[in-house]
Amino acid sequence: MISIQNQDFSIADEYAALRHRAGDAGAIVTFTGLVREIYDVSAEGSESASVRSLFLEHYPGMTEKCLQEIQQQAEAKWPLLATRIIHRVGELHGKDQIVLVATASAHRHAAFEAAEFIMDYLKSKAPFWKQQKTATSSVWVESRDSDKAAIDRWQDS
Image (cartoon, rainbow, N blue to C red):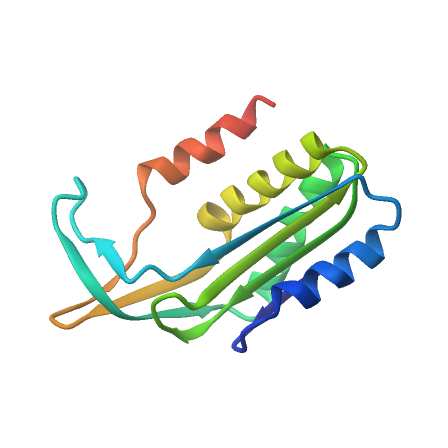
């Protein structure tokens, strides 16, 4: 199940719903991404800036399709009983919840790996555009080499 939404979400409510859908799960893994208040502005991380806001845009229809494909890939790779992906869009501020990935399986190993796989693919492949605003600038966030490396490790598994 996927959602792209402006409004915040309740981790407790999402967990309860996933646990219900998963039936006889032996493991549920959740990951919640938050908007950082301080962000490295240089490639080396030697400078940092206070983030005023992060604005996320997406292409309706295309983004949902991409998230469904990521979810289906995870479900084909691991024996999952249920999954949940929420990604927020619009203007967000420091400490706001931005993404939820939750996976349920009979065994913890599959749940952990699937959650990590989904998050790696969301970070690198999902069509979201992020504009970060500080007191002195507004820049579009570009993908990092570490994001590509995270994807590469799943290619051989």
